[in-house]
Length: 316
Ligand code: BDR
Ligand code: CA
Image: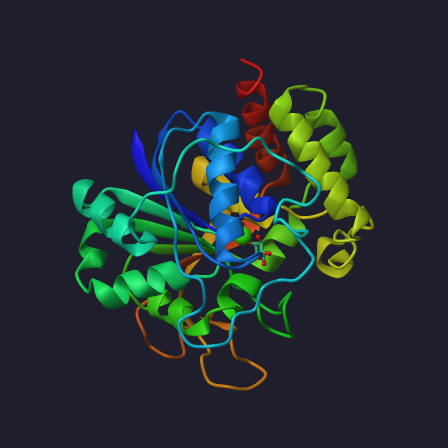
């Protein structure tokens, strides 16, 4: 089994992403680490515990950073509801969080996995920025980081900033330039492969507690009009919203659904309108070695098939 750590800020799309990761037989989830982002650190940690509980995932849950490394905190007010899970209310997990900081757990697990550990990062990259600052030898032990974050052209938090990268530009830049094998699944790529309302209706014919929670999450996001903002790139009027983190996990579960191009990527950290933008050197003008596999397309049918398998798993 492949050892993983999931670093996240649940967050409603983080929630479905955790359902997907937990359903995958090939994954050995060694820990879930929380970070402040969609909601504050108390809530993302609580939600991580409760989400593990709802899918019966027995793993470490460790609390991460309450604020970014440098800039002011930017909680994404409202989009994920007051608790971070929209209108979904989960049973409280009896499990306690681990006593260690997220970055210490990641380091310990990385050393333990002796170079095999993979990380999926789907919140602001603060925990990983702290990890790499505190443990300069960490890259030696990490096989790969897949990031839901960044964008090729435009942002969702400001003109160019995608939320996870923009919320902590310094940490993000440290991560991209760490020399750890890296992949990023950014905004436009996700927009273009989003599932339509009728795709979701097909998927929800599989009825179980996880498909019910996912349906409620989509209802909440659709009502907020979150599917509409991407009309131009999604080339669709369909109101169904995006599940960015979930699609990113799907690309790890089945990499054949995505096409990647290897490019040099860093992050603008200087103050100004571009702060938090991923700078992707498409034509290798900088001459830097290409440090990141950038997802350029995802196959919608392939993504749907991954989701179908997930819902079937929870009916077993
Ligand atoms: C990312 O920002 C968050 O709101 C989502 O959970 C996702 O990780 C999308 O930009
Ligand atoms: Ca997230």
